Image 1 (tube, rainbow over the protein chains, first blue to last red):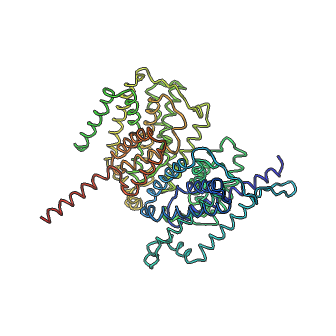
Image 2 (image 1 turned 45 degrees about the horizontal axis):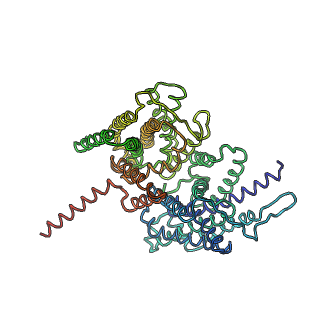
Length: 291
Length: 316
């Protein structure tokens, strides 16, 4: 094992971190702006992956079209869920937790009904299936693509939050929703959009991850808790914080399994417990207003 | 104890005591399971309903009770009676430590930390093979010869559950419980009138872990085995679901939730493999439309009827 091995692991950790970021940022958006803990976020991710499989393999569509369609459908599902159901539970964080968890169970069985229990796989798109070689180091092209995409998404979200009217409303409403309502702005509509964007990001994460993982039942639970760890560690509603926390978590996951293989399954929970005990409000260490 | 509820409790006891007389072996086994599940769900409700602490890791203390009893009794040959009490006491001890770290956090952060601890306890049970038996757990636990026949195990379970339910009923109707309610409704106000909120939360967390430990020991006595699967997240959620479906603002709510969900489970499983779909839908409907659960429906209905009756009088 020489340094090229570690470097390859580092690249894998980086792309793992970007996947975590795409997932966690949607979660953080929903939690930070609306104060809703969305357990079903992992389910959105899983549905995104299964939809991509369905569109590519069963309908013979192109990978890229499948990714777009899958994430847009997830935005739709999230929008409907928020518009008709979740909005009834504002101000009851514990009930939201249980409610979104109920949907984890529902979605998981619906997927089982539709696709059965056997794991599925999606092939890498032709354009990105190979490996770059620079000297002794090998870069899988798909990892490079994900590592480039992550910061672009972070930048776009930051622009949405800082430079648009919707972003201003989001920021204001996360501080004092009643006041924003009193100013004649329909925060309900903005919140529903935010939930849609969050679900879109989860679906996108699942769709993008589909060639790299085995698409199977249980992938929802496997990602949602690491994503929560990232959200809490990064500090709520901070894209930069989430971004760095995701990068750290990606490396921790890759190297953690390398050095402590016996702890593999429980690693993320130990990490979660440490973060919650030592820095419950994340890197910024400021208490969020709703907790 | 109010007379009505006393009668209800005695009626319930007689009902469960009659089951071995009329039921088949399967029915007896099923009802023994139901009994300790009722105990488990009610112990969780001390946290959820009375104090407003949503623990997703309650199953951790249930498992510690079960494992501690098994390891003491089977591995070290500690007498049955001592192990039987030591299991729950160790669960309570673990609850003190976990609780101390958890009650410093609020709402969802609390929930996540309890979840993480349950997973860590799972990991210990799963990986510490020399002590816990690892993945396959410990099997073939033979309780003292007195408890060998299923009927005896059943009556023993019934007796223990009845006593502990009575104790919890007294706790739930004590001044202590009123303080817990105050904390649930508004922790800041409770703090400002001089309540040490975290201390009270820690105490109730410990008590609740203690009762959950008893439920775990009773599980071992019935199934004669213990294994890491009892610690899965889904098991924790099942109990939370019982509390919510039955009604968290009523002492008897979790019991009704346990009865409904266990019977529904055995009924649904005979017809379809999609139990999670049924459970999820039921849970979602209850949370959205009846957040105070099945036991919350009756006061709501009677209030409606009284209103209708009053309107009728006025019109006449």
